Image 1 (tube, rainbow, N blue to C red):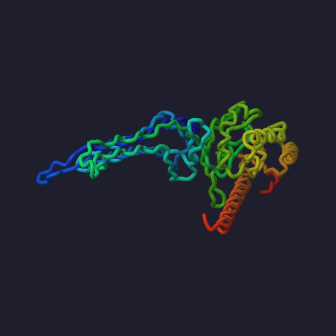
Image 2 (cartoon, rainbow, N blue to C red):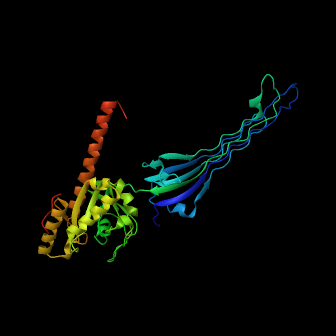
Image 3 (tube, helix red, strand yellow):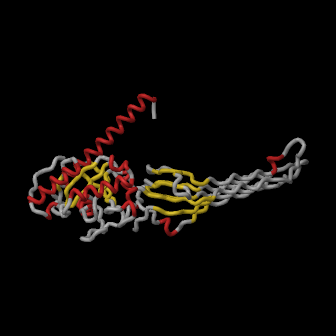
Length: 355
């Protein structure tokens, strides 16, 4: 299935049904009276976040959605049936924007969350609603109100616990394939990964979701390479795993390039907890590896981990570090929530290389 994270969709809710003009004509009822029923309400258009989806590709082939109109009222005070609703099912993490692509209408971050994007029109009144002491045989009824018609944008920002970033060919997809059941495309040329990939990693009996983000190069914020189109998916990750390939001649420069592009896209990204690792460490000798680790440590201000997805060296350490960071953030969030309720009343160190 192809990956698509932004689509334009036209929706229209149903018109309300018209009220009826009718009079009772029954034997032994001398005066009768108005008995025209009200029209039914038009169908609504909903957007629902569901599990099991990670792309908006379905809305590339069908972009117009219309709810049914309400049924018209009938005699004997029979109210018309409500029009059938339409529900657009989207992945968790989908944002709904107005046609201007700037006004956020809804952010669906949990499974089962539903947003009504277009309300159906109310049904019209039947003539029985207009009966009064001075007009006991009204011959008027209301038409139904029209439904809402609008164009919206659906934009997906994947929700993952950890996001893997780095230059092209830094070993991000190989890492994801080594620690999860995901099978991203892997090749020895730049920009092999053309869209984000998700995988579930398991360490010490705990599971968490990892997102592999397409590689960044200098000028990505201006559209160079793949650009920063997919960086929106990093916004929802809790922790960043920054891979710098040992193949790079200037590992410090490679690290700085990615950090700069993250900052130019959104300063909030560089404030996220970051784990730095020297990847593809099996491709260089011991002396070169030590030199590059020192350079990377100086550039990042932290002690990098060493890993090789091919030999699986360092993978458990990286996963444990990621898990500890994720758990720590979850504990902090729980403590903050408990504090808010109290106040307001509710609501791994690097190992030596062993070839």
